[in-house]
Image (cartoon, rainbow, N blue to C red):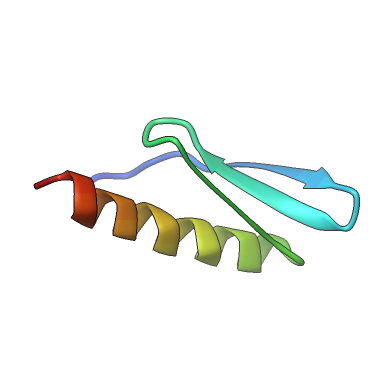
Length: 51
């Protein structure tokens, strides 16, 4: 299992999470929500484009 970095920044009332190695970005109302959304987006991206 590979580990990726997540960069998180606050943008007004939302948190934006970015995975620079993969290029996926997501957001959430909390840090935890932003990370969970980023994890899901990254997993789906890797499933689709690793083929």
